[in-house]
Length: 234
Image (cartoon, rainbow, N blue to C red; front, side):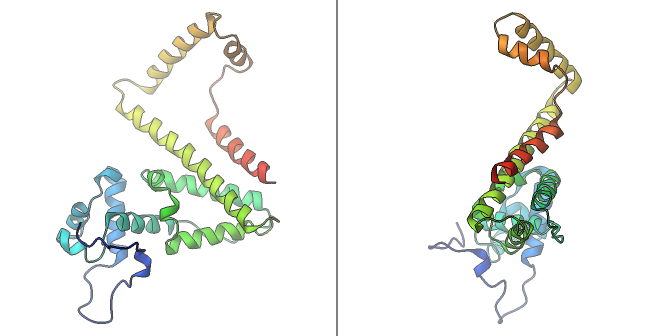
């Protein structure tokens, strides 16, 4: 592939432009914004060097002068959306701080539904991602623990949010693809499940449904998952 380095390289260690030659026609921010627009509209699979070049109005090979690899393009995208995190002044309540961080991250992932697919430590050290991580550690200042423990806590909270949002997004995408309504789908499945539970073959499931046969409070599940993670560290 054009522009692929023979040794490992981090795009942030490369100067965006040198002091010589004409001023570049595009900035990394321009390129990232174009890629994010495509991913938001059509999904991550629609993002390619060719598509981004077309969005910018330049040739594909010209784009490689700015972004050597597609992985670098993903890193620019991750940095761009990481910049949307609100870096507010933390309070003295580290649990409340981390719950606020979790809700903010969940909202960010719903704005950019491709984001959970790129949640990886590989893309976690861009300028905006580092500022976000520093903010998370500031939120944990009142929590008396080694920084290694605090980093684990941040990673676990992000893991809970990523897993939960991934399921929400997958469910929503499946629902949109159905030839019938979500209500019809749920009614059919609930009726089937009710018949199976009533058969006597699943006494523990029957006891579980007898305790609480109402709809699942998905927001409550999310809050309890966060609380249990924080309880484990507390």
